[in-house]
Image (cartoon, rainbow, N blue to C red; front, side, top):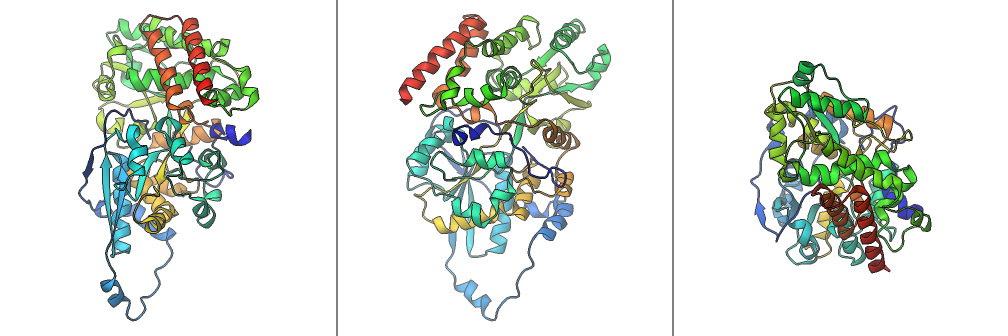
Amino acid sequence: MAALRSCMTLCTSKDSSSQTNPLLVLPSNPRGEIVMTKTTRRDFLQKASFVTAGGLLAACAAPMAPAAEGDGEMAVSQEMLELRVGSIAGIVTEGLQAQADLYMEENPHISVTIDVLADEQYQQAFLLFSSDDTPDVSWFQCVPANRFNDMVTSQILVPFDDLYEQEGWFDAYPEGIVDFQRQPDGHFYSATSSVVWTPYTYYNKEIFDEIGATPPETWDDLYEMSAEFRAAGYQPLAVDYNMGIQSHFSDGMQLRSWSRDQYNCMPILWRGDRPADCNEYSWTDPDSIRIYEYIQAMVDNGVFVDGVTGLTDYQNGRSLFTTGKTAMWQTGSWDGGSAGLTRDVEFEVGYFYYPEIRPERTGKVGAWVPDGLIVPKSGSNIEAALEFVAWAYRLPQASLYAQTAGIPHGRADIPAEVYAEILSEMQLAFLEDNNKYGTPALFEASSSQPYQQATVKSVDQMMAGGLTPEEAGAWMQEKTVEIQAEQS
């Protein structure tokens, strides 16, 4: 039972007094077939932003052994080896490219190419990683909704068990992340490379000062200030409908409405091998119906921007906030970094958490921990791929990845001084808060694709006016029973 429920274990470090404990990257919304493009190598290590971190990283690295006589001739005669590393566009590619550049510098006989996969990889990743055209290594979001569990049961991935032992990952990672990565067969097939959290509500301090508002302590405070924003000519809260409401706002309400035991059970309620005591919970429980009620209350009290169900593009929602049209913007921790909102706005930004619902807090934000590297068995350079993975996760290179991507790594032993150099003041505050309050894994990290799609549709039907909160919960429970039957 512990193994089945470990996916939702709180991510806590063993010694928070001596090290920073980052506890998740942003879920994609895949559509269509895979398209692969090749990035141009960029020399990240020459950028000014690495000067300070370079000294820190060098301090972490072991000294180079003196070259033996004849080593030069051996290097020249070595056959060139090409490694292909799959990635997605954006900060993930930037982090991997920085690592690839350094790896090639240290290993002149190896060429590392970053292949940028379109978002559609998540629908067809099973086929890609089973094919002869698979990357040797790939970044992936290792969740059931992306068929990661099917990849495990079909044995198309190389286990990382030896790496966890040899590289000290059992000690380097918080226990909760290790438990999350341990699959039902007892093996490991990935290791967390980054961690982000959601939902956070960012706010425009100038607009708040204009109407005399402060971060809300109660839900009534939030409803009342939203009316005041509207009276002053502002829309209250910008949020993209697809990810922001159907997923992340729901995540926030689940954290606040369910007990910890129910929160541990509900994401895996779809599984045929779920623990027996999970059967006492359902989507028609008062604590489950309350999630839908709070979503509806945000609409009824005019908190969300007008026409929010049509605001399906993330950047369009974000631009409403960055251009000063809305007082607030809900998203994740990634927008609190130096490459986030502070770079794109001309006003001071603050943040707050949604108010509590029940006194026994499960968490203020949820953690996304499934992002990491995998090695498909159908790759042509498995041994070299595993060597690259081991190297990429070592402390200096993990720090480099965090430095380049601008987000916390999954390892809990990244030196605090490294984070002080690479994270914004706001992100450092996130880390401090999360050490204090804890951050359970997000609901969608353990949901199957049909189960996650059903939860999204239940919210969508209610938002469209077709279902009441009670009816949405009843509909979701019916779908859950259907999915359970398919697993039997």
